[in-house]
Length: 240
Image (cartoon, rainbow, N blue to C red):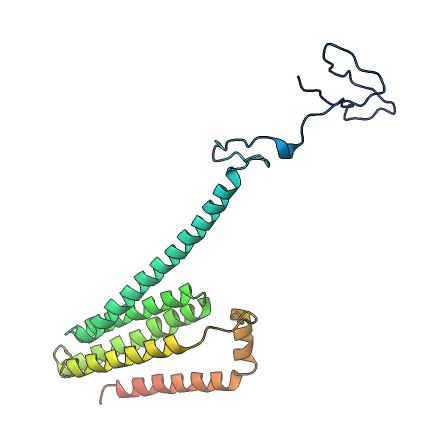
């Protein structure tokens, strides 16, 4: 039989009240301290047969390594999901890029170009560059592709027939693309890893730099875009 320690009440009332001790058959002297059981370290390990909401006790031996293995497994699953998303976006980007150069209809090529630009924005999102992804979608997918579609429609209207692209240099272009791809892969493989330093600046710092330090080049770029738009309107006007 295990001897329990006498516990006083939780709420004090300015006087001591000794709880009755649980004793075995023979009585102990009044001044002798109560005996206690073994320390928690000497307890046998408790089997960790727990539910999804229960917590293993502190002295449970086999349960601790298993929980650590579960955490490491979650990290591996997170990395695998990121790699899977990167692979899916890369495949979409490669397929849409091939559609740009292989489609016979020029309007279809422009649509494939829009898909490639959206896939590039997805790569920026995976790299945690939300500002670049937004600029990619708004400026290139929403602006450049729209201008190219208008140019194709005006050209077909002037020519009176559907404009089709001729893939005459397909083999030479494929060889050049393969050479550039190999050169980029070799250059990336030989580059050292990124040095450990402070985290890169976020979107707020980039916005402050554009409106303070680089405000003049930013305004010049806006003026060039307005000039290009005015030139397109002048060229597309009808002859009197």
